Image (cartoon, rainbow, N blue to C red; front, side, top):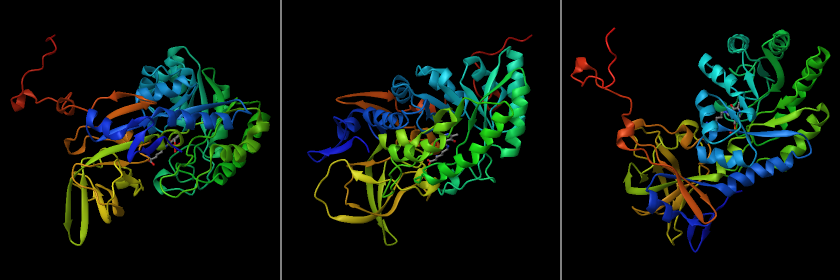
Length: 429
Ligand code: LLP
């Protein structure tokens, strides 16, 4: 479900023709629909309305502060995995008390930042991390709220790179270690065990893995209660799949219908951490065709976006539908749509049947709103693209295209290579 549609033969985002945005801001260009972001958020929010719940948008999927502001205003909390993401949430006006912090490698600096900000809880991924949080909370004279990220050892049936809830994955703790961690947290004056967290993977199209995971966690929660530990939050993570091609992922309603009977009687506040479900189909990557080329029996459409702008096809072999911004009567060809980066993996689509494009024409790579810009890099010294947010008939540049100088920011040539002395040279003692 999204708000990118053709009108009079031109693909629009809500009320805005995409060719107009490309002319105004250049390509490659990410374009996001505020209506789609909010639509997905609200659908999930409504589906869980019968229980106390909090939807924490997964910042890693799309960290643009205008996107975060859109969701913060709608009442969302945020799932973060770094100090940088916390800073982004704060810059967007998000409420730190609605922030949950996951990740296996939180540094002392990040933990201290989050304790000071007063986040809702840390999703603790190891016994060592729990001790680090306790020590820092002590030093800061605060209590830290924690959940233990439990690894339920279920197969989410998704790509091996994005499966996280198997015993062999690096995430979370097995139930035995988790039990010990709760006992430790309950006994520690600086720790407050407030939740139980799980996250089993990403782009999960079925509800069964969630149900299986929750069923593993339920007896565990009951045991905790027996030991006098009653966490108020059950965080079932993110991972809900979307349509990239012909998947038939569970809708918000079907997801809730499967999950709610498993959790309703626990009396806990349910937390969800969707990223892709909210942002995935809310964004496209606009790119212009540079050249057409044939060789070795293959036909190439060379575009101005590369794997540095959208790495999902190269990294996961992910499918993204690619459509012309202007629908013209064209014969269909089978071609590889490739970028300018000097890697054979810089390929958005291999042997894809598409209406024959011409140089200068615009293509839209669909489903690029999640893990698109947020995974972009400067590889090949390419400037990362600009981002535009559309809302009805309005649109705004929410991130400028990087400039050449941005590529070298913070770099310097040392004096021993003939570089100029640093302007802010430290005074000798
Ligand atoms: N919560 C935690 C703890 C996570 O690790 C993740 C994603 C999410 C929530 C959000 O998952 P989502 O609802 O977006 O599936 N780069 C990959 C996806 C990596 C997901 C990592 N963790 C991709 O482009 O497919």
